Image 1 (cartoon, rainbow, N blue to C red):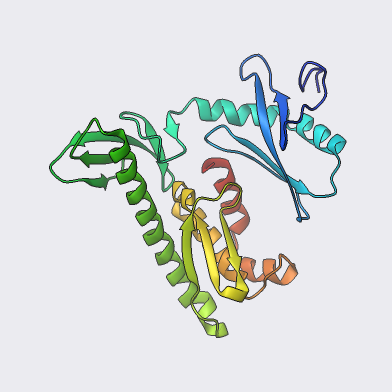
Image 2: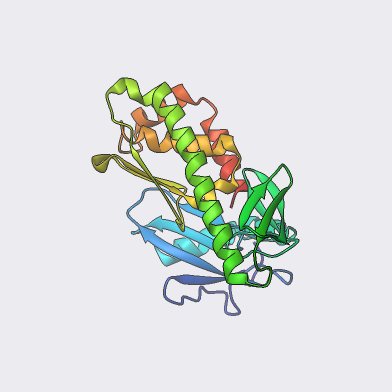
Length: 254
């Protein structure tokens, strides 16, 4: 690894829970958001918004984190370069005519047109917003966000219903409550004691096979709360290619 991977003094520069990482002359310096959690594994993600997030166990030292990011500098740089080449918007709030948004595994062009009724229509290539006031950006954002959230709720619920009936129902567990919301570092979460599953609204950017992986993953937690051997054996039995789906999810949807 070359010198000056980090800032000018080659050392991590912390600003609360962030670290600055120098990627090179093209992408410059990025801020890595650092989260110390009660987890066993390390998770590094680059989002389509160009945010870089690193989650580590609470006991990991700063020196180890510096070395880890140095080793993955080129990978982070490649991911950011890839996302910069697309015009996609990561947040449904960023609605721009002619830009694109990732939706069910496809980069969809966004278009806005004047209409007597506010509505959103999507086909294989476009997401069209028909609005009563084409100049009202707040109105456009609200319409798009409402449509996105409702679509996410519908798609997720369909997959939860399908996997619940096919896999989980026979174990005598009630169908869980499904909540959709923004999540910064997780695609989904499950609280078995409350029989509740929460799914990230941005998971809707992923193709349906990746969504199915997250759904089955969280449903499996109703039987096995921890990520132990029984959990992964169950997941593998009912979705043998879950590892490939997970890899594709983290590579393409973020």
